[in-house]
Length: 112
Length: 113
Image 1: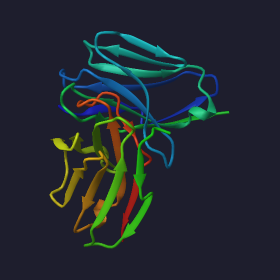
Image 2: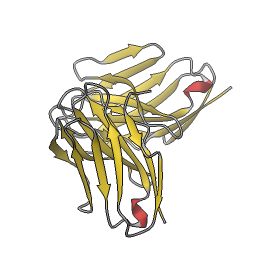
Image 3: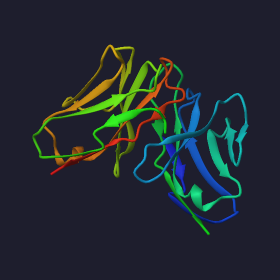
């Protein structure tokens, strides 16, 4: 019940295209859903996050869509660029319980 | 740059040995979290300290321990090392006592031979 399932495992998108990564969770107590971007040899960097009181959050080219009833959330990267090539992790946590539960990661490659 | 620093960047040691990983949180952050990243287990939460006190434990082995000092830096001690302990160890920090907006350091890559 603590798992966060992430798909796809890898993704190839052409430059300018839309990258979509999906996550699903079981624990309805989760109330914070961040996305992290990780480049090789670096630590995960917080990209964008959402709480269940909104269905969508947009920051620049990055958008989180959240479906509370389906217990799913997704990351959309618009106008994908080669510099976006990285591994993306979704995560979830319960406010007051001090741990992030991470998805298994999606390796994104944006071809020029 | 997240503002979280970790040393050393790389560590190579032998089975049975003990190592200490160090983390300095972002200026002003009171919470420090430790995570392990391995190919088979992904990113796993180990332990959380807030202002010097242990707040939560995850899948941390008994051979592992951590502490947070009065200056808020933290150390993760790994003992009786096994080959399977080879992984990336990340420290993250946040300003509050809960897990929102955790900022990760660059990590320490541990290789156990």
